[in-house]
Image (cartoon, rainbow, N blue to C red; front, side, top):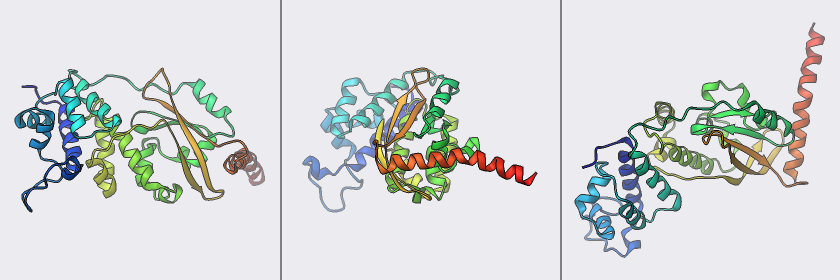
Length: 295
């Protein structure tokens, strides 16, 4: 019998969550007599039958007491209709369960060269996110579009935290719920390395207490990955901006990603980027003039 590990416990809870989402009718299974199906989704024995293992074998996997073999995990993924991202998450948990200690990768500071590169993108918002979507660095245009992240205390500079604790965010993003759900899924995916990381536990604990939607979505165990996309933000001074975003992983630290927001040449959003850049450039000169006047 395999000893329980945080990774296997998380795998069991993840599989249970996916099992509860399936409709037996969609899989050609009989609904049973009214009132006899006491669980939502599939029963354990129904999954076990589709995987061709015993009910006890599957129960031990879901209880976090047994690491499934590669063929068994693949069969479970098929039976539960896991998406590619969900399969990758489950596989990662099993792989990490074999480690005696969690990965000891240390956080790397953002290199000065990357900060300089971002600052040279005067008409393009750019910022760096690290483990658990902490915001580590940014250029002035990104700071203006991220609701003054430069004025936020360092411990609060976390993208998911901002989504759920800053009331302005729900007006800032046209599709806030979709953004927030994606943030939860990305956070859960990143947790596969070390599900009991104290830093993760502190963030999840805080958000679970302060926001019932976060608590509900986190408990559902969504996972996902995104490297690019399109979003619409509502800037208080410039109106709607529809922009593309792309993430670029830095090979020096796999936990760090450079996020760049861009817009097609000649588009209204690109014009608004330039307007905002001119406002930012004018601010130091205006502040200096006001300082001289008050001297």
